[in-house]
Length: 128
View (tube, rainbow, N blue to C red):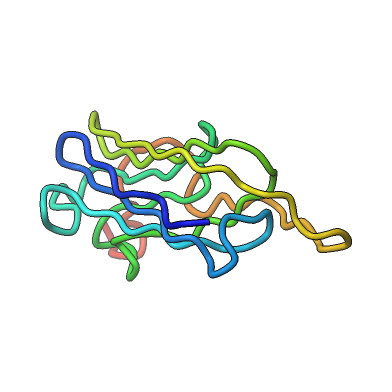
């Protein structure tokens, strides 16, 4: 399989980088993401990665050392639409994921940072 092509809509850009064996259940792919030619300039707006509509990674720019992308490990075979969104901008890519080899463990879906829907950064430890 070949690398997914980069896509862009509005300010966001995304490229999914398949593992060496292609998109396979349980194999981790990398996702590179940028906004407007820089690393997410709107720090107050949450960045969300979704697989077929389900969040698998979210962060606030500046709050994450890897604020330019994510790892994605598909847990099911078939067609997957991966979406990157920030505020009202979003971009999608569709890839086809092959089944895992017989007997291979199937990972649990990741939901890092996906809890909650927004709000502000807590200041309790700052004494406010």
